[in-house]
Every structure is written in C-alpha cells, then in structure tokens.
Length: 79
Image 1 (cartoon, rainbow, N blue to C red):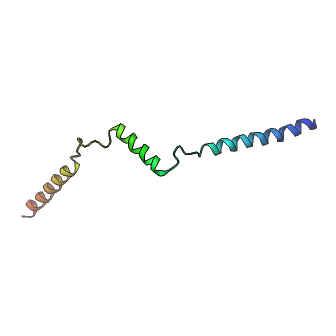
Image 2: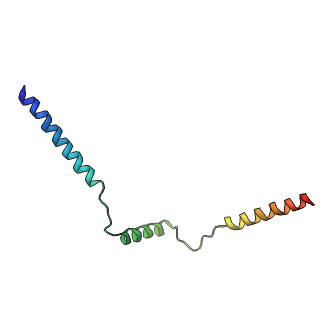
Image 3: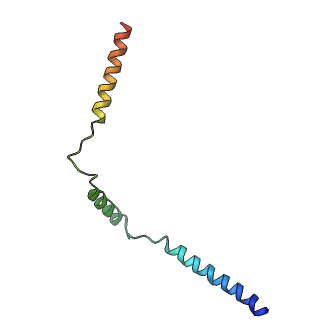
C-alpha cells in the first residue's frame, strides 16, 4: 500500500517536469535576430504578392470624387 502512495507523487513530479520542458520549448524563436525575422517576413509577403507595383488602389480617388459630389450637392441645396 505504501509503495503505491510513493509512486503517485513520483509520477506526478515526472509529469510536471515533462510539462515544464514542453512549455519551455514552445517559446523558442526560429530567428536569432530581428533582421532575420524581418527579412523572412518580407520574403514571405513578396511570395504572396503583397509588394507588387502593378496593383494600384483606386480607393483614394473614389473617396475624393464621393466627397466632391457631396460638397457639390450641399452647395446646390443651399442655393
């Protein structure tokens, strides 16, 4: 009976040690410096096509035209 009681704390301690070791390994970083991380990040984003020069956003032009129409409509209503 006493040997069973001794095994449980030992097993619990070993389980806690294994959990602590696996938790420590989860915080490991793949990159040794910030420059390596940024270089890998830029390379990945280029592979996804985020930094292409051919794509232009028309949102600023659309917003400008929309605001101009609102101002013109307001002026016409007030006259």
